[in-house]
Each structure stands twice: as structure tokens, then as C-alpha cells.
Image (cartoon, rainbow, N blue to C red):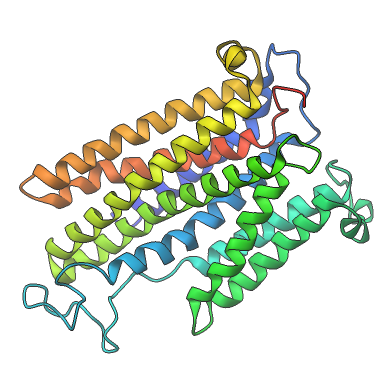
Length: 336
């Protein structure tokens, strides 16, 4: 039993890594489009970068919610939830994974910066990488910003004030939003704003659910079901708003990439459209699992039975992150 969970995580991680690695050739098959050199590696690095954003942002988000659990962490421990706080009066939360996520994000950002430094070609050796050239281009400066931001986020994560990592993580989100919409693009500011909202809400939703389930696992033995159910309920209410924003920004961004009159055709004839369709289907599965978990939380005799569909939701969200990383490495379906 002790090894089952780590093995399952490793297997799921390996399967998720196959999506960005093998996805470009599958999505491009029969479309007549050409992938950029090393598209699979780029997609994998981008997936790792997105995941590295989700983990710490989710932790900060859920730890904030934990302080608002009704009756558990207000003015000392509640009678019904004895020992709900530590000696310093703070809610007990799982050990942070933020430092590990920062290391993964730093490595991914460094790999992506090396690709930019070689003119979006996969470097064969260190001599092919023109580090100085990064300062001469907009994409190069954004790549360097992400590398440095993850480095600072890691230092903040292991400091006495881990909440300060919110600022460098925010810088990464802004850099990603600007990178996805170059200045030459029509209404690039609108596109960057949409991506900023979409990526932020997606990271809070994915990372938040992961950390909420980790918290419930820790709290169940300490406080019983009351505090855990309250935390999951708080998360579910905020997640509803996050889902609404994600849906609105995702639809708007897609219509900017693919005009309404061409959407149905491009969803099956372009690599970008096919991958977008796969992402939409996965998100639909995530929403179904979320509704199932919400129903159990509100109506089941034991509200923590909602954890079962919520765990499946985390797995599905991990697949969505992998597909999102793949989407960034594929050619855009329209010409500006």
C-alpha cells in the first residue's frame, strides 16, 4: 500500500509526458502543416512550466482558504474540531511542494530559453546557444524573465515568507501572456489579457484542487470530516467562478484564432483545432467530475466521499495541462 500511491503517480506522470512528446506528429498527421523543429520537446518543457505554476499558486490559494474555514480556524480552535491550529495559531497544512515546483519550472524555463537562443532550433551543443542574443529580442527577454522569476520564486518558497513567491510567479504568468501574443499580432493587448486571466484561473483551479485534497488527507486524521468538508466546499464555490472565467476567456481566445465561420472545419482539419477539440472534451470530463464531487459533498452522508471523483478530476486536469503545453507548440490555424 505504501508503494502503490508513488508508483501510480509515476505511471500517470509518464503517460501525461507522452501527450506533448508524441502529440505533434499525431495532431499534424494529414493536415499538410509542418511542425517546428523539436516541437515535442518544446511542448514537454511548456507543460512542465505550466505545472510548475499550478503547484505553488494552488498552495497559496488553498492555504488562504484554510484560514476561512468556518468554526475551525477563527479565534482559536473550535470545540468540534479540537487541535485545529498549530502552536502559532495557524491552520495545519501539508508540506509545501513549491520549492520542488520552482526547480522544475527553472529547468523548463532554462530549456525554453535555450531554444529561443538558437532561433527556435533545438541546440546540438552549448556552443549553439547565443545567450547574449536573448537580450536582443522580445522573446529572449521574456524567456530570461521566466528563468529569473522561477529562481526568485524558489528562494521565496524556502524563506520565512513563502507568500512572497506570488510576485515572481505573477511575473511568469505575465511573461507567458505576452509571449503567446507578439506585438505584431492584431490587438495583441487583448490576447495577452485573455491569456493572463485564462492561465491564472486555470493554475488556481488545478493547483488548488491538488492542494485541497492533500490538505483533506492530512486533516481527516486530525479533525474528522467537518473541517475537510468545509474546505472542499469553499474551494468548490471559488472554482465555479474560476470555471466561468476559464470558459469565457477560452472561447474568446479560440474565436480570435479561428473565425466563427471556420471553427467547425478547423477543429478537424488543423493540428491546432484537433488539439483544441481534445482539450475541450477533457475539460467537459473535468466539469462532469466536479459536478459529481459537488453532489456528493452536498448530499452524501459522508461529504468526504466527494474526494473520489475529485481525485479523478485532478488526473483529468493534469491531462488538460499536458494538452495545453502541446497546444503552444503547434502552428496557429490562421494567418494574421
